[in-house]
Structures are given as structure tokens and as C-alpha cells.
Image (tube, rainbow, N blue to C red; front, top):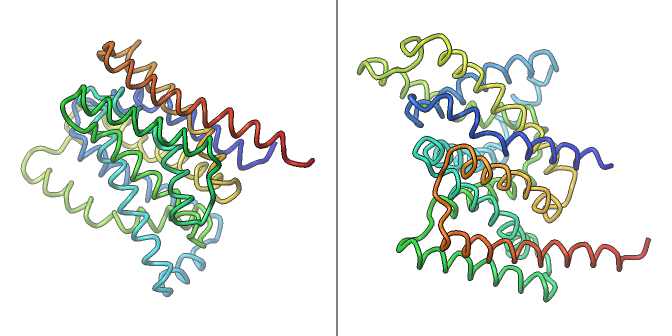
Length: 291
């Protein structure tokens, strides 16, 4: 099997079980969780860059305005995704967060059409249309736009798109992104500490270890994802991504007892129908290709 596909599967399985990790930090504000993800990830990545002797590539990238701007954009998208996701998990919206990752594969398809000049077949357009109906139905039932799912889908989909255009390898790329976030997050943590609101070293050894471990929990699946994004088509990346929202949905409903009402089930069923149409069409299209 293609190495990139293995990377993608591993990344999405880890992300599927992510709520189990971040729920251990429920007493820590989501903004501080995100800040610690950045700090410890950068420290870990800096060590990797040093031992892999990739510092020269990183310095060369910093002297190239185009590369800097590309990665600054990907940093903003990644930061948005992290903050919204951590807030959702902390406030009991794991199910709605999973909706974003169910929508994301189809959002990737639309991005491929708009930005990469890809053409969709009729069944793919039908799948996108069905997914849109599902989102509209959920909006009507909620009485409000399911913004958590939509923001997560848009931010991560655009991040994947930008990463395909970025020339840096996985480790220097992620190090540069964490570097952009380092100063603002460090200042934020220092401010929280000055106000007596800092969690680190004040909430017990277990919490401290989970905050430090956030670097590993963050870096490993992201490196796998970046490696996959560079090796396999965006459409295939989208199909494999079904692993993550399925795991998160099951955790939200079965372990954390989040409500899954009849109306919500109908909305999700419409989105799942779109995904099934998309997946079957993709399988049939692959079979028609000459070997």
C-alpha cells in the first residue's frame, strides 16, 4: 500500500480518539490548551530539526517571502481549527465537531474544483448537493448555523490545500508554523500567569504532564497528515478522513453522553448519504480506469 495512505490512516485514527486526551484537560481553558500545544510542539520539533540537520532548510525558507507567506496563511488556518476544536470538546460539542470532519471530505472536493481546476462527475456533484441539504436541515433544526462543524471543515480543508502548495518538508514546515504562533501564545500564557489564571504548575502533576504531552499528541498526527498530503491525491485524503469523525461521533454519544436527537440523526443521515454516494462513485470510477 502507498506509504502516504498509511500515513493518512494513522493520522485520522489518532485524531478520531483525540477527545479522550483533551477531556483530561477539561479544567484548563481551551485557549491555554492551545497555547501549550504550540509551546511544547515547537520544543519537540526544534529537537527533531536539530537531529535531522534540517535547520539550513528552515533558515532558507525564512529568507524566501513566498514561502513565509504561504506558511503564515497555513498557520492561521491551523490555529483557527485547533482553537475551535478544543473549545468544542471542552464545552460538550464533540458530536457537532464530528460533523465538521464528516463535511470536510466533500469540502475538499469543492476546493479541488475551485482552486486546482479539478472536474467533478455528475454523481460527485449530487453528493455535494446532498451534503448541502444536510447542513441546511441541521441549520433549520438548530435554529442557527452549525458553525462549529462548518468552521472546522473550512479551516482544515483550506489548511490541506495550502499545504499542497507549500514546498517545505513536513518537519521544517510544522516547525515554521509553530514558530509563527510561539510569541503570541507565550505572551498569552505569561499574561494568564500574571492574573493568577495559569493552569501549568498550579493544577497538579497529572495536568502538567498532559499539557507537556500535548506536544507529542499534536505533532505526531500532524506530521503524518502533512506527509500524506504530499503523497496522495486530495480526493483520496478526503475519503480516508471518514475515520476521524466516526470515532469522534461514537465517543461523543457513547462515552460522553452528548445528545443525539432524532432531528440531529436525520441531519447526519443526510450527510452520510452524501458520503456514501461519493465513496461508491469513487470506487466505480477507479474500476473503470484501465489497469
